[in-house]
Image (cartoon, rainbow, N blue to C red; front, side, top):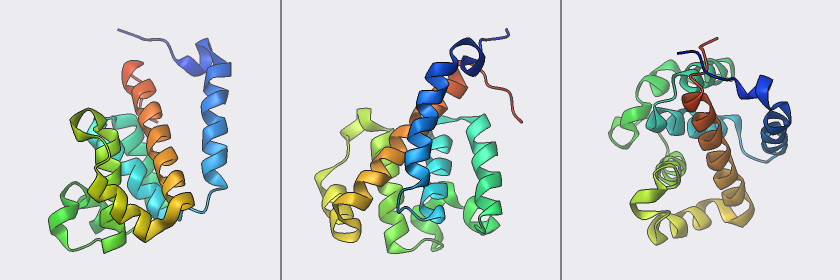
Length: 144
């Protein structure tokens, strides 16, 4: 069944989402951190459109293919730094907020590694990609 595409049906809503993207584009987050967050959240949510798009972006930004292949097994792969593991843990806990939320342990580790402003930007990146995932999944957004 063909579904609405929000960018056509409600362009103002789509533009509001792009305001968040513009904010994130000017944030201090590295491309690597943004790419890891977007890919991991999209994997957790099962968003084919976003996994496809953000894999291409990550490769364009210089991400290693093997790290992308192993992202779903980030805890055990040995391919991710301690900082990236904290980033991915935050991504999973915020994306799967219904389980335990962002735990105190992860939060303390994140504040220690990233500080308040960078952690705020990480959280906003996670919130934004989760919103995009929900839009793409609910409207069956076609792959590019």
